[in-house]
Length: 468
Image (cartoon, rainbow, N blue to C red; front, side, top):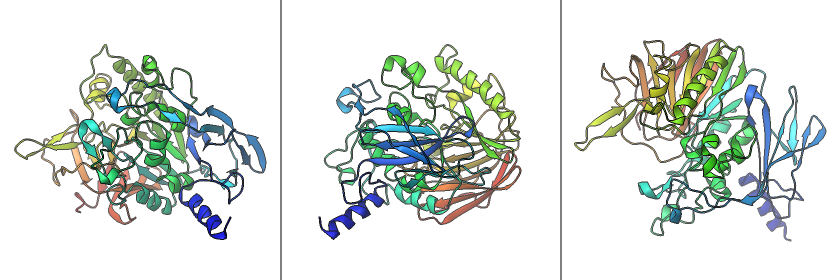
């Protein structure tokens, strides 16, 4: 083998986020290593590999075999949101391996790669969301996945990693390549599709590689990770909790189990925490009281309330904005504002007129493909929406100045509002006090476009409407 060939493969290994398991000049195997934070902030090391067995995790010089979470397999075709002719079985030709990292571990390595470990006090947080490349036949939406300007998640991830965060929070929707790219769409030509590893790799693991190496992650489930969509990959690859039979989204008969999970808290240090909520299976319409979702989300509220008692400052994270806006144009071209998620509001309003427990100070969400901040004169938590990190953007502008009666929920009086529509990027939170955070909004090149501040449950931004 020539020196050029060996060097080329070494560069390819670095660019693709792969690790050579048997020598630099042999073929690199599928390999990804990262850390997700689970209940009580326990760090879970994950490795995805096409090797025959799980590797060892070296912690403070002690080698411990990783456990097999999921074997390589192709699941039988299940019902999805797409027609059977536009679906296919989900193939995962790799092992998912994992191991909890004990408290006070100073270093962790797998196959020579250092894993990022959580700090005792987390002060620098990157927030991203809605990162995949949209390929959806029913919407006739075919994003140019091959164009880094029209699908810039790799640029966003690299810029966010360069900020050197202590923690990354993803607010959901990792996977968007649901259906095949038509032959006449050159922008997405050759893209993998469906819910198997090839689409997950291109939509998330390859572009996210530098950010996965930069810090541990809190992963939030979006509607694209519901069981009828990419839920199989969600449970296999990302969710920090145990992968249990019936919870894995492989059989549609068990979706009432696989589509829901309990909230959990991740301590940030300094008497603050993040509480992660799975609202992936909500709907945009009011939920009938006899619908299973009503019972699940009532239970979610009660558990969120209990978890919020553990810290003085609480940041809730879910996918669907409860207190944010969306915008659409009517037939005459007039912009109309849409309120927060009506499914969740219909359930939560019966428990609490403020929708969220009183100790929740801020909410981070996605789903609406914009960046947005909303703060209230009423005692609602401030709401941030960060669904602007890669997928096809919403382009209907939110008003620079809201009308006096504009509200995302009954009884919520808006005091401050800021937005950035049709721009890709990420948001950062930097702790500046016991209940204070400095917020910045960055474009895909890593340039700050807005600055905000959070104090308690209120926020304010320098720019009301970021211009392109």
